[in-house]
Image 1 (cartoon, rainbow, N blue to C red):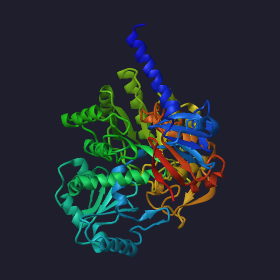
Image 2 (tube, rainbow, N blue to C red; image 1 turned 45 degrees about the horizontal axis):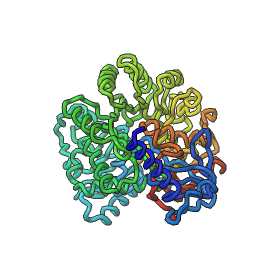
Image 3 (cartoon, rainbow, N blue to C red; image 1 turned 90 degrees about the vertical axis):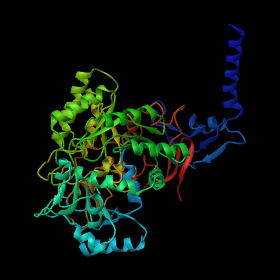
Length: 570
């Protein structure tokens, strides 16, 4: 062996020895009940962290050998630790906006236009307490099915002099006051885009009512963006990340976004202020894609520049249907959707598709199957967003083609599951059937559609499938989104299709391993193993042993991302 090579190998060996035995670990966590997610060794007492990664996992005695005078020691005092939650479906921009607005639909209850006096009173009071707000953001439930929909006149009574934008909890519609309509440029004249115009609700005389559905929301979003300087946008997203950290969430997939939003995450990363790992899709709610040169250039720029642990792209989001009305409207002709997916798949992009109906979900499975046949094998990781509506007959195909079902357990369960159509008794949310098939589950919240994005409410619902009902006893229109722990809904003693329950371990795996795999991060995230990133959550109680009905009471004591504490509970 050449002498120089011998010296290099010796120096490398010394470096490994020194890092492990002389310098020791930066942080050790001891006296814990640690769920690693590693099937070969699922439980441990302690772990050691060096830099951003896990250096060792084992017993207290084994890990304490890594301790040096400068090592930070965290005594878990027997608390349960799980891998960091990887929320597979969020909308951080909407969440950040609404964190800085008025929320009229919380776990404690909901105030809707059905109670117009209280609705107006709340918005008026909020406006008075925020005199400098150039635009007021509100989150609320309201009907999206004419003729029972509210109009701008109701908001004008509350705030006549500034734009008010009310986001429906499902994020598929907006209610605007007259000032917001003017800001968006929506008048009695039709807008240029026919898809947008079709979703502007107008009265019999053609006047805009103030309600924007589906693709028409993009009109308001375009008008809103210039109102916020970059520093304010960065604050919205930074605060959104911190809010997610409170629930043990350490990484996310953004289910809407564009190049400009991705650049904001990169700016936060570069400042050291990003506390969740982001993978962001290109897509806007119910807006159809068109493969223009500009769009393709943005896609290519994003995946070329952003592919690290904190900011990544290479993902396109489709909406084959919407989320308004009694039954969600279709947005694509099947042939058009298939052509676009095949084209983008051929270019190497990962595809995720929103589907709220059994028939549109079936179309998604058909399309993904065709893309694999036409474009040949590769590691695609096609995603079905809201796989709650997956027909039973398609589950075997989902497993065969290794499709990912991205689901939100907190949407479940009404007496009719998650079905919009009360006449449709098809079983939804087939978690156990999907598990048994060998297909992958990836859990998420769809925050801010679910508020707050609490994974422990979701895990409880996955384990129990309890039926939730509003205090009034009757569902609000569109109440499919007011599931577990939402809008004052209360759990009953009844259970929806109990044979589709899954275990706590399966639910945690779907929120960690499954979601990490869905974002191409399973080599670094999802389990607590040597060499993986030190992303974890310390819990207030042992979710694996408490009564299933008490899992939702779990609080996060500490959240760590890349070996650093980003949230410490009270």
